Length: 572
DNA sequence: GCCGTTTTCGGCCCGACTGTTTTCAGTCG
Image (cartoon, rainbow, N blue to C red; front, side, top):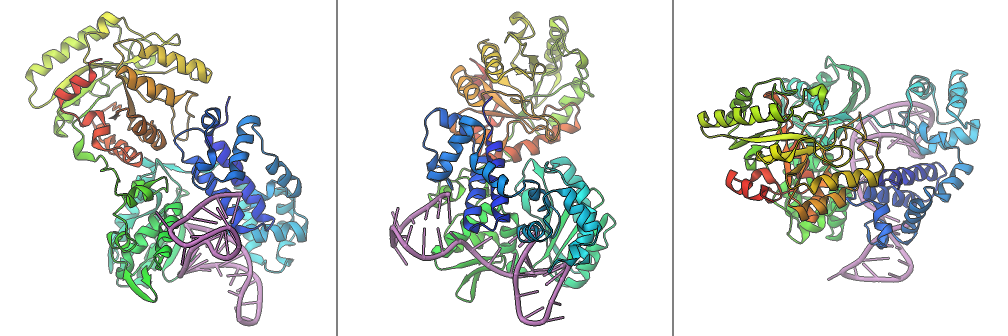
């Protein structure tokens, strides 16, 4: 199996950590990290680019040397430079960087002075009181090492969107009740609408800063105050979520919002542009010499550096700055563009609500259409429909449509793609549907080639319309199955098929990178909720967020079409 | 190690907070 972009990025980050502990040239360290960012966020897999003979040094932050290292990783799965670094510096030292207050310099000191080579070494030294004997270390650092060393692990913990919202919204509401508070804004990856959130960054403007800080750290859910200053505090909540609060003056609000929304890579790129123009950009504003020339709003900040406004969802330094400079930023799809939902379930299979209830909820959202797509027979746990029961549902939808006003229910089915590439129901019944939503629900472990061929074969069926949750991933629960997504996308476009962006916050499948790829290929995407109840039709907003991160505009999205245009597009 | 519309050498983002100091280096975002 070929190496994933994330594995290449991880390798570079590992090497960067070790080099940093070795006190290597900090810019060289940064070069590895920047390249890791590029690779992690790239729509195409490095392995494929190598196979196609692409010149990798054309990628941003990748030069001749790192291009060669990517080649080596793709060809051999290993990186000699990392092996060599690990021979000099024990790999376990990397994990110690995760202890609060320990960075590369101090880890290096521990390694050199106390001969620490493993986490066990470190724990023993801390328990014996030897850490505090090292110059620059004290009792607090030692206590923190003892406290945190047991919980270190390789895996990064990020919360899903739904969990992040459940934690963030009550906190924001609480902050808004504090006297003197004017604005409370969630920044960071939450504002960029990433599919998962590592910590929360909250920006506050207020008239009584000291009091606001006091009330923030006194929030019910706070279990640990990690840092607290005049303008900035960091706490950990009961849920484990870390929250950073920043108090900023009104004149700097836009600059601070831009700064704390990130991403870091985007910020650095914008700051470079400011520097090129002889300006200084920081979280307080844009400055010409000592004079602040912008700061109050983000629009002001962008204008001051000569750029049009860039939506937060795009700020990942993956081409948005160049696009902005050339005035070719896409107009991103938004909620009001959506005219219907093309994937939902009813009580007929594993949904919670009836046909009538789902129709009512869709009408209340102002939709023109709702495709009812219960499972097919193979998904027995979901009480999937066989041809007879699907025929009954088709009739029921026809009858209901006669009574509905302003909304049309589309006759659909989430048809299983069998492991031989056949569809789970006979063509005769599928042909009676307005559309099929086809999906893989078992045999996730097929080889990349067989999985790809399975789905390609399914697309050959003229009744195939939309590939649902195209990679099967469940955020934090299940990895995507191995599949050549690009090949599927190209085939889908050729065949007049579409791909779903499943809007369920646990899925968000397609990823943002995959949306970018679909856009490039010219394949239209259906943003669908896969709702199993009336209330989960609301998940549409998560799908829209994800689509916006993938630069999709209304034109790139299937369900922004009128019913008439949609029917035309569904004809193969 | 990367990068270039002043460049192939000489730059590379920047401020707040902490702990351990006694004026600041290291960490963090």
